[in-house]
Image (cartoon, rainbow, N blue to C red; front, side, top):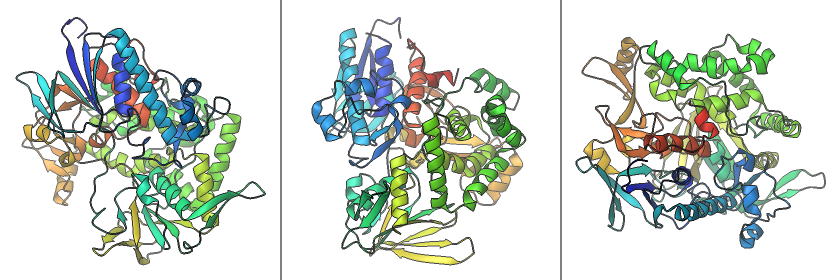
Length: 585
């Protein structure tokens, strides 16, 4: 690309955080031969869903702070010095009271990301990169044209544009199944404005993640007030007319997510992680597979040998199953809100002393590092990853902010919130006339059927299926393919197929495969067809559609790492490497 003086037409579909980091990479490369078109369905750039009114109200906060955010143009601390007074006043933030270690209102963070996008647009103009910006423009289809070696993008209003390369950064997507059809049923808590409901009955929440906490922050404020008493303790008081209001969280294991603590490496990097060369060597010696046990041993267990030798001695002979069993057993023995208090105190000590809770930090590093090997795991190992390791990871690396913990504890002390373990076999019966009945079995074996007039699905962004892919021409043309992993053992694959696992299929060559969520991508995030052919015109950064091969979203960290790989695949060399790129070299 750098040697071709003809203009190269690139499109970034989506102007949220992923699109922002991709745009940043392209502008930093200072390639004046680029023509970049950006399509964003909203008025605001940078914020995407999580940091706009689509995903946040004034009460919602980030779970990262300024010091943990990958560099864009300026830090938040620098931007606060020049930010419009109207924005600072709206969120009661000034240069004097800003702290780079504290979490921020999500809508404020959205304003920051928007400002960074605007700064990049100015830089683009200065270096001569042609920018064609389309706000309030929803992309409805993408058509590949291999004969012309270009891609056509179609908008909802009927306009279409042709490009040499398209980078899909469309972000979050929550499918709607019953919302709007069944009274009291919400497929997700977003946009949160819809949950500003005055209620006088119990509310069922499915899940106990950060998504559930978003719903809790909104619903609790509409039905009562938080106040700090004379002892400095946060308390909650139900409002008149909401005396019967209660929040009931339902999760498979009945556990709450862990609390945000001090990170030794605020960007979750580690120079001792397995390199790509080491992973490739292991894959070559292992019939093309990367072993989950090998990765766990070298990218997790080994990290404690020098740093935490006592902990290392405790876990050095453990496999994934035994380690997870030890950690989950500890958590499950303590009532969830008692454990939350303990972890809140542990996190407070960690922050005060600036000492990490190291095993939790390393688990977060492992989760992020899993994105490269995931597509090379056997089907057996992927099932272990999803069934055994990811449930622990999803709890531990949520990094719930302290203020959210305080509110959960205040609600619990007031008898307004509780959590129940429903197991893997729970069912939700949806009623045409409104509401749902939650069917589950307690740990004591008691069968429960509880009716709720209001229900909110809070399991978080789902990994969407291949069939859910929104740009149907790519689906119909065969440009994309179902993500799947081969079974290492034909006997195991045959057994799974015989037992009726609908995700298992047998190929003509006799091999067995497990279908995993989303579409097939390569290491550079380019889409791949059924024959294994890479399409160098289309790159995929939309995380809901690549969940099988990219199981850890990691927010801004993902955006930074994926954009670097896409830039390299385009033939553009970044002038510097971010921490996330170092993880993969």
